[in-house]
Image (cartoon, helix red, strand yellow):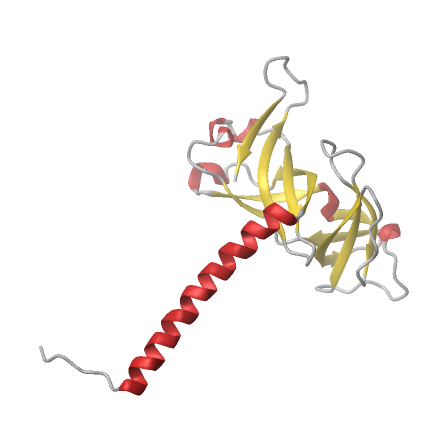
Length: 193
């Protein structure tokens, strides 16, 4: 097979493309690290949509309590629209308690002490409720995770730790099984992500 020699211009273009790919990968990794390190940490209540997914795949889809809110939480002059970007103002009483919805806005609200803003989108508008999504609904479950040891019909509700960066990016940092009756030895089982 003949060896092809690249011209100086093509070699330079190839070097620039390779450098751009490396910078992109480093940027994605850096943004994820910065979100975890610099972000505000929240706890959100969630439940798996279909617990049997853990038996057939590596991901579980989550449904968050804050994703199903009454229409009275809407704080804008115009009615909400499907696929509209929204900002959910969350009240965080303590770092260990689950956040609750203080309001849903069409513009970024100002968060006070004990509050955080999570960006989301309107999935559906019903007569009395809003269904929201946050791009946190799909969670990779490692093979050694305690979630995989749970029986599909007995999977408990979850407490999801989320880090929200100042620029709005959110990331799941850990998941805990919420037991309805805490046992003295293990009230929560924590999974690191």
